[in-house]
Each structure stands twice: as C-alpha cells, then as structure tokens.
Image (cartoon, rainbow, N blue to C red; front, side, top):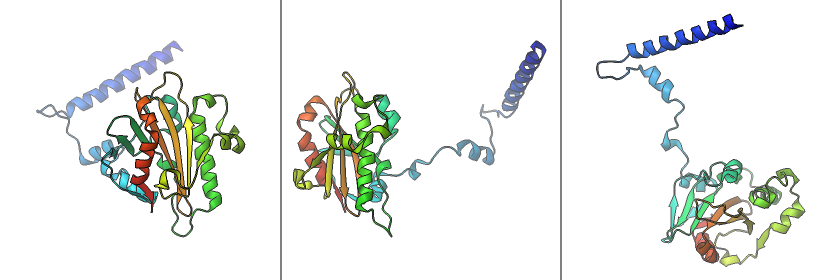
Length: 243
C-alpha cells in the first residue's frame, strides 16, 4: 500500500510541474500568456453576458404587469441574494427586481419564480390561481420562524393556511393593483434577526388577476417604516398594475 501511495504521489507531482512548465512556456515577453481563440471561448463559456439577463421590464412583461414610476421609490434592475437572512436564501434563493423607498425604511422584492407564465392559448383558470395561492402561501408561512423545522412544507394544510391568510376586501387601499384578490401574510423574523441589518419587519403580499396570473412580493420594513406600511402599499399599488 505504501509503494502504491508513493507512486500516485510522484505521478501527481510530475503532472503538476509539467502543467506549470507548459504555462511558463506560453508566457511572452510582456509577461502575458498567449491564448488561441478556441481557448478564450472555452474559458468564458460559463460566463453569462449581462445583457442576456432578464431585465425588470422583461420580468414585468412576463407577469403582464405595467410599471408607473414614483418619486418616492427607486426601482432597481438588480437581484437580492438574502445574505443577511440565510433561511430566506435557502428557501427563496435569489429574487429580482428590487424596489427601495427613498427614505430608506422599505425594501420590496418580486419573486418571478412563482408567476404562472401566461399561455397565449389558455388563460389560467380559477382553480389554477387557487393552487398558486396555496403554493405561495405555504412558502410564505414556512418562512415565518415559528414554522421552521416544526413542520415541513407539505404538512401545512389548507385549513392552517387560511387561518394565516389575510384576504383584503375588493376596495383594499382603492385596489390600485387592479387585482381581483389581494392577500397579505405576516412573516415573523426571529428576535434579533434583520434583513440587511436594519429591517426587522417582513410581510408577504400576493395579488392575483383572473385570467392573467398570480404575483408574490416580499416587503421588508424598518421599525419606522412599518408604521407607514399602508402608505407604502398604497403607493406601490399605483406603480404596479395588471394590464
């Protein structure tokens, strides 16, 4: 066994030095490694051109949602990785685009993965929208710290979900979203847990339009921002409307 182990070690060392020698032999007088076009393509084939990433306009078009700018918010064509909230990062991964209030007390993020893409030949039925409510609702409920580890996603029943759902009336905040249904969920963060180190309140917002689709939106507030919650949602409802 020792002889076999030494043989593998010697082969590894020789291979390593041969590769180093091959690289050094390609270094030109300017200290750069010359590469063929094929080598450049192979090296960068895994890098995605930023221009090919979906923009906030294309995401909203997929959701058939119109956007109207507001002087109170900044709508960023960026993504959120939830580095400050590991369990959100685990459950939601990366969401985009991001909406931030200019006063710094609110951040909202769309979840494009939960949208049922509109089929030109077949519109989503009421049953499909209800299923979408259930799927998104269970996800939002599981994000609340009281349900972490205590229950699995598939164990959250419709009865449990309905108790946590806050169905808003048709005229909720003048229904600026042009939605048929508006549902809110309170997502409880752990004591001392913060999003971006300062947002301590979280709320899930779901709004649907019959024959169009279902949208999910995650809202984060500072202590001061949560007092202005209705004001933010009313303004957001003027910014995003189903077509």
